[in-house]
Every structure is written in C-alpha cells, then in structure tokens.
Image 1 (cartoon, one colour):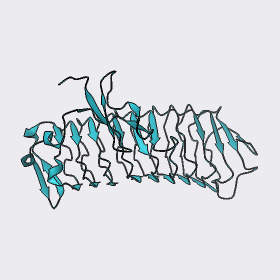
Image 2: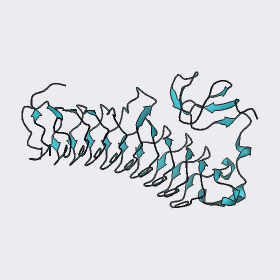
Image 3: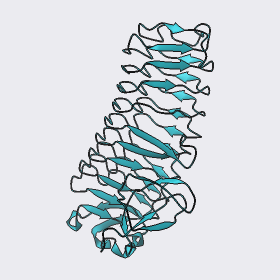
Image 4: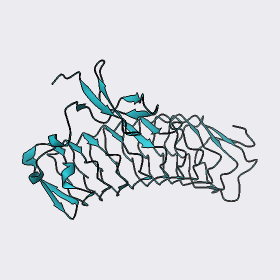
Length: 321
C-alpha cells in the first residue's frame, strides 16, 4: 500500500477524505472541507481498510455485549471488530496490562468502565468512536506513554482521574459541550501544554465546573481560556501549574476553592470579578510576591476566607478587567 495514500475521517460530520500529499499524523488539527469544523486526526486509515481488517473475534472475550478480555497473542494493537456488537468495556478489564500499545474501538461502543485501561503503561494510542457517551473514573489513569487524547462529541463529563498521571500526555481535545472536568481528571500530566475545545468557538460553551485537583501538577500548562459559563473552580484545581502565567476568571464564576492556584510561581496577573462570592484559603499560596491580584470588589466579601490570598501580594481593590 502507498503510505502517502491515507483516509482521514471527520468526527463532526463523519465524512472522509483521501490524503495524497503532505505529511499527516495523529494529533494534527485539520479543517473538514465538508462541514468546515476543525478536528484532530485520530487515526490514519489505509483506503482499503474497513471492519474486515479488525482482528479475529476469537481473540476477544465478550459477555452480554460487554468486552471483558483480549488474548494478546493477537498482537499489541487491539482493533475490536464491530461485528462483536460490543457496547461497553468491563471495569478493570485491561488494568495493568503492559502488552497493549494501541486500542481502536468499534463504532457501536457506548461506555468505558472504571479503571478499564488503568496502568496500561505502554498504551500510546487510543481511537475513540463518535458513539462513545460515557467514560468512568480512572479509565486511563497511569497510561504513561499516552501522548494525546481526543474525546468524542457526546462526552459531557471528563470523569475523576480519567487521565491522571499520564506523564507524556501533551495534547487534549474536548468537545465544546463538556459540562464538568471532574476531580483529578488530568492531575500529574506534567507535559500537558495544550487543551482545546472543538465544535464551537474554541472554548467550552457549557463547562460549569472544574473539579478539585483537576489540573494539579500540569507543569507545562502555560495558559487556559476558561468558559464564560464556568461557575466553580475546585480546590487545588490548578495548583503547581508552574508554567501558568495569566488567568482571566470569567464573570460567571461564583466559587473558587482552597489553594486553587497555589504554587503557580510564574503567575503574574489574575482578575477576580464581582461574582465570586466564595473564595477559599490560600488560593495563591506559594505564588510570586510580584503577582498582581486585581479584584473588582472594593473589599473582601463576607464569603471570602480571611487568608484567601495566602501570599505576600497585595490585592488591588475596585479594579477593572
């Protein structure tokens, strides 16, 4: 097969195109010529590839349309046949299996169970189908060689510690309809530097909550544009993001938890709007003394902790964004 002849599939409208020139690789952002939306190249498929190229059904264990196991004698790359009718992956089904390097799910998959692939140290590529609706907690935790992840449009919540401690994860693409990034979802992803929302303006239009420890120790994250719908920033949500330089907190935010930005040593400026009614303890603990904290309020509201800043920086009251 000519390696320059490949097919890419837009996960927004499902259309496909044959790529004959240039270099295309997983993780690249392309614009679909059919719907005009941007999408991340998740997999490069040979033009003749289809479900017939999936692995033999006998390699997989399935009970009541739930995938429960795989015989790694079939190789390190799991390509699950659509013909099996798999709708879900059993919890802990592949936990700590070191022989798996890539997974391609069938187009009928709906859910991935708790810790289903947790500890799959050598897993470096996952192709999620547009049909996926639910991911359970810790499903890809400690997949240390996973470098990128693009979640399909039907995912509304990134579960607790879903990708925690994926040390080489550097690029994440989330649908704009995500409402919740749960506790510890990307904690310890030290190389994560780029988070994008697709299917809209590039920022989530429905995100309401960033949970506790969600991006803790994401030391390569230098900026993140927060949604205008965001209501809650959890405790330690961005703590020890040592490359984070500037944060604009949306006017929609009403609550910021304890130590939300603690240890963000490069943070130089932050604006806290009028709407923040609850501010926890030591929100900026360990930040640089030159940090400029601009507050829309003329004094600390009653719902703010007495030691809300936790650092030497003096707030500028009555400031404008």
